Length: 493
Image (cartoon, rainbow, N blue to C red):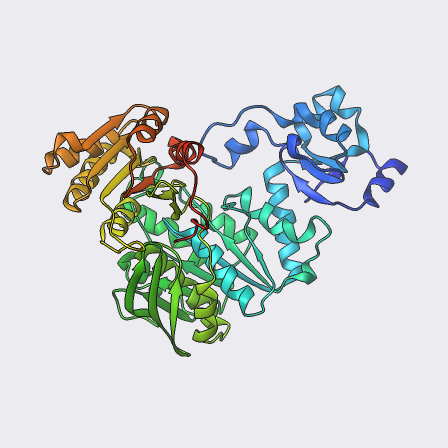
């Protein structure tokens, strides 16, 4: 980590002989013998984190040590200006930048490990594809380290890597790492590739998200392409042939390229696609190694595309299509990313509340309006509840209005908007001909949740979609508090 100690007396030697049980950046969740990184607003600002970050964690260094931290990584200038911290002596490892120190540590672990690193990025579907890829590779016998949850930032990525050195685990237990890579501005993926250079890079999509920071979709495409440019020499690029901006990244890579697609001819494809029921799709999987019938217990063509990306990765390991198909059949939906919940009162909700953008929202609306039957009938009413879509920049209002207009054309029965520019969403639907009695706008998610609890009825199919910052998951929570789930209702029944 390029760290130094306050002094080099015998106490320092004792510290250097202790084993680290894990790594933490939150003193409230610190476990005994973990190494605590004392992050501060200066660290976040230096690394261009978007959002608000509060207290300086150096304030909690004494508490962390009292809770059993093996040591604390702290910013040298902060410690040297604080006699109280200096008095803690050899319990501190001093660095110039705590986030950079964490990154150096993760990079060193990966370098010494030396096995296959798979990295996944895209404007939507990263976490689902990461989970599907990990699941398929594990089913084929690979020992996989995967990113925690959606840990995909300059902090999340190194913390995910360091799982292989935590809680008694060792790098020798893994032969593959599947890591999610996120970004909101130019240069972030380049930095993540410095931390964890990829052997296989997966590009899912380029959509109008993060416009607040990047300005244009062309800038988004350029920022996403940093993952392809960061590939190790001879590494493999896996590209979505259905997205022209992703497909164009082929020109940026001189090494092997594998494509996947639903609409465009590609190396890995799905044909004979059949919607068995909401949340279950049957198809024929085609790869360079052959073909097989497969099923995916997830809703939507976007998830089928994610599954093809996972199949393309598996193909790099020469895993047969039949093995991939069997693994996909047993896959589960990532939390808040299209979970189908059937309630005992006879209605169904689709929980897709983790994030949202215009393309992802329209994709899910198409999924619930395709007329795929449930077990014995189609939905009597289709209700779309959509939160404000965040980080869309100066065109946010117009993008919401255009999306609302498209939703109206998809013939949903009701459209509810929650917060901010979601008002433009419902207004766009009204302008496109949707009756005023079928659209509603709520200033808060709590108001929407209360209204739904009182209005939901048997036969309803409800899509709840929203950016994480709007907390549309509270609508799902309200339903689950008020109504019982039918037995075995989750994961695409």
